[in-house]
Length: 466
View 1 (cartoon, rainbow, N blue to C red):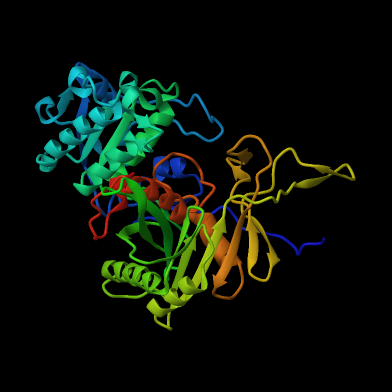
View 2 (view 1 turned 120 degrees about the horizontal axis):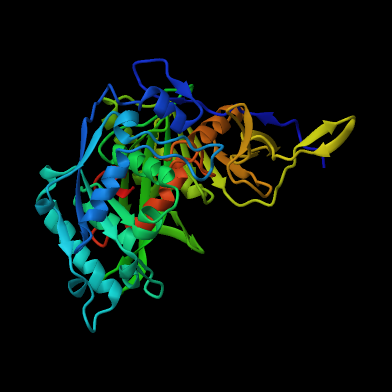
């Protein structure tokens, strides 16, 4: 079977310090060289940290803040990871702990109570502290919650489907508190302090309202919506039977505005874990999403609206989307399938003979396999620092499958946008993700919203869920 010619999209550039012509494909190098995008538009100046921590471990939080002010050299991913020269040098912000009296310490005997499941007693203790800290919101910007290894019996309960991290995020988000969970194993004891400081500083900057980078060279009249569904616990039956619809709205440059979430009253069908909405529910969801965009843009509508989700669009969902979107907006509905059976190998001409390259296909390679289907490699080789760089390090990367249910035209613009959106996850320090942020964030939201037994029908800022 012969496929059509393939195309390669150049690695998308990111924009940094907004008042200068500052571009780079490397997020960390761009931050060090140019400063964050919002550094002059919206100077933060200071990030105040309060904490919930085990009794006697305040010095661990204090040491972590000291590390953020220090220089660290990479001990892993040396072909990619930049040296960390301190949060003030890179981000232009100071970070400080609020007075210890503003924070809350927990003794182990108060956390784990005899006769109570560990995950219940620990989560109740922490949620009580978060509620208490909500009364002091004007005294800090980010609430750190330190989870030592000896509290691990309460971190999860597989039988009940409980996860403490998601529970903390749901609890703090409902109180509009930006939280940062610090685990002993992944943050305090992790060997590469450079990587920890990059991840932590980016997260703190975003949670305080900063924008580290945006996408360059993308149609500013476009908007992106990521759809996700999650079943939620019905407190009356103790069964997961409520379906929550999440819709995240992103500007063309990949920066998230907010997202809406609400309990859907009508589900047309369910296949496995994938629910499908009725025409009326899809119309409601899309109307709220467009309203959210307009509210952030002085009533202006996008010329082009692209919707991403991982499951296919039913005819009812397609009809509901078109019902909600005015005819002068170009609507595209795209399913993005992560797992495919396709592989591709890059061949070179070696001394007159064809042979497999030691590196995979270039990231950004795509080709069409059907009238409304295209394969796109979001993983693969990137020319970085004049050298080949493959983030995953080994294995043959498989492409994602993009299937169009509405819209027309060529594929280059859609593939370029999706590839760019794989670089917009502000919750880590990597060069890219496999999925665009529209779907990556959707998965995070779906797991967290399961813990929100009292979902308030209002827009939420994603920074509270990071």
